[in-house]
Amino acid sequence: MSRLLRSRGVFIALFLLGLSVRIVFLPLPGTGDVTVFKIWAHAGATGRVSDMYGVGGTPPERRLHDFDGRQATVNYPPIALYELALVGLAYDVFVPGFPNGRALTAAVKALPVLAEVAIVWLLVLAVRRFRPGGPEEARFAGLAYWFNPAMLLASAVLGYIDALFALPALGALVAAAAGRGALSGGLLALAVLTKPQAFFVAPVVGLAFLIGHEPRNPLPTIRKLALAAGAGALTAGLVLAPVVVAGAWPNFLQAMGSFARHDMLSGQAANIWWIVTYAMRAVYAVPEMGVADAFLSPVRRPLAISTVVQLGYPNPRLGATAVMMGAVVWGLWKARNVRDLPRLALTGAWIVYAYFMISVQVHENHFFMILPLLALTAAALPQWRKMFWVLSTIFALNLYLFYGLGDGVGFYVPRTATGIDATVWLSAANVVAFYWFGRQFGRCLDAPGPLTGTGLTSSLRGEKGPPRAGEDAGPTAVPGDTPRPRESSSR
Image (tube, rainbow, N blue to C red; front, side):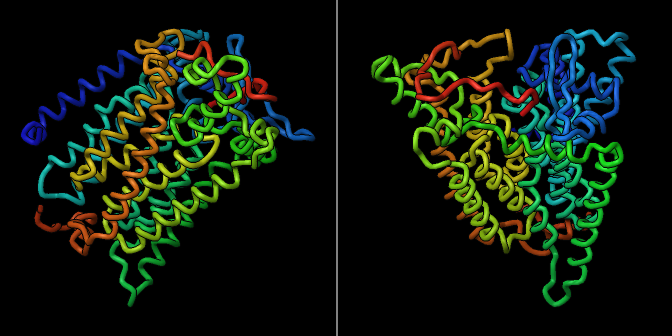
């Protein structure tokens, strides 16, 4: 494999092959989220993005957008809406009348694929800068992301737009490690204003500014942090100013608050809470269905947090948040003396993984940001490549077992083929992988490692670096658990 990666021609050919596969999958319908993205693209192309949240009202209006007989409100920050609006404007130019068909589906899904192209370029460039001795590791990082079945499913097949925030979030980390304060702060603000999950990368971006830090002369580090904070604030101000001018600020805040109103333990994420969902549904279904049917039927839908409370159990939200924050603080404490980009990226992956596994209300696509961060780590630290592929497989299966190849396309492997719902087995495997990740993570950050010291700092700045060393049935008899309409917006 390393011999193949030495050839630029082979790398370009493999990149073009991956791009061709993605283009073939673009017309597939994706998940229901793609329908929401189409509605937003149409609304942004035919109106003003600043008005999409609604304007004024007491209580604040939550504007409902209509397109081709479908309706949706908005709960994403403005950058994602601006990007979708650009897609809508371009589509209206080339396909007048804005018909809702495969061409619109492909146009909307092409947006995250373009972001993925940039992520591959960014991974290659970043690894080349801190590992300048040869191209193999850099090309490994790019192709490990590009030929990853989870990434292919997430963007080109199912149509999630997480790549839109992953690109500036990863760019913010790389820029911070290179000492580019203003660039890093601006990119981080863009990432958070694309999707709030980018916030989990922010602590690691802060740690990256300590690369090259000298305790006896802290002024350069303080200057970089100040530039980052100023650029972030300026970027956020420019992005949010039209919303404020339009009188839609309360409406925007209401829309962002919807992230805290999702009433579910796990939004089909293969984590600890999906196991709890399965167990509670099965236990309460035994009197109606019998033990075998209750425990061997697929989990039909997420379990509401309000239902758990109605049954007399403590609200899990506070406890889950506390445990998740404990895992995050532990990871940051372990990383306090890290001064190299690969292990900082690893810390970011740990933080996002802890959020995915422990927090409530997590959706399946929130796993996304782990993989580009871990690809960067695995390129420089080969001992993490096995973990990278394990987590890639878990994410791919999480997407496939719930959505197959998209709405109306179907599944080739039913969830009941494994007896107990395959998503429950996958969640259990993910718990084991999370424990395994935590043990390796602690050891990796405790060890000095091959990439610490001033040589890495020099290479980041372009100087000479160191020498290379199926859901049709299931238990639903939980008392008081009635179906609730999902927010008419995307994850």
